Image (cartoon, rainbow, N blue to C red):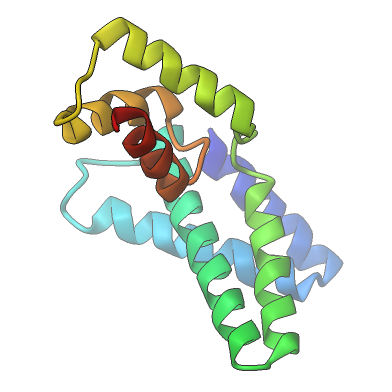
Length: 147
């Protein structure tokens, strides 16, 4: 399981005194434990659930880095990007722009969505994308395709 790999890597980082990696992996494990005990889940998360948490953590790091860049704090932005890179190692390979567009074309061809079907189209596309692409980018492409 993915969380077991993360825990093993955390121990390795602890032994190697890798402070950034250790801090990052601890935060992920804490987020997973919080999700498992929050009452929304009925036990341990599967790999897909852990990947959702990882994706949310990556998104937070990206937004924080952008905020630090706009506040002219490059050291903090670099630290956030370093954590982002650590987290991205545990996520599946993202889709390229061409792959994403091809996948959207397949979903549209199979379902025949029309101009007012943004909600159902997004649901169908997101089921196929499964977290391998940025949600905003997916929404922009689906919206453009519906127009």
